[in-house]
Length: 227
Image (cartoon, rainbow, N blue to C red; front, side, top):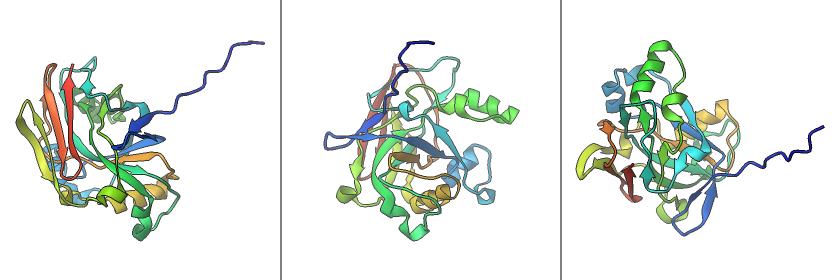
């Protein structure tokens, strides 16, 4: 019988704006939640119910650097609003959904677009394109008590000072309460769950040496260098 010690898994945390940490349980990402982005990716947003995929908790990275990943030559930025939950449940009523939110942050959903295209063509899941190491650069979480619930405001990415993506949070097809309520029909949401709420149009490739500046009005700017 083995005497080896079973390793204790580490709980992944992301920073808050006041210097504390927020433990992350799961990361849910909604796909094609801005109409213009859905169109640029070749889809009709008026015909789709919401769908989600998952990143791993430790994909979220507050370091300010993004290592260019292997097996890809076409890695894209996607700026997103991050929603952090303080509580959860199942079948959460729409009108109670925001009661479960702890706070919000600026984030990026970095995507190996060439691998995603291959997966789509083969009818396979997207994780190889989405859930790789440090694929979710993230800024500090700001609590609802400080900023409220942002449902409108400018969202954008500039690369090396040139604006690439821009839109407004009010352009989201599925709003934050709807995402929470819908997800809770299929999963039991809990404290520490995080939702990435989709990206506006203008996604594009980055290369080593690029500096990305992701901004959401009221949440500040997340600066990330591609290395």
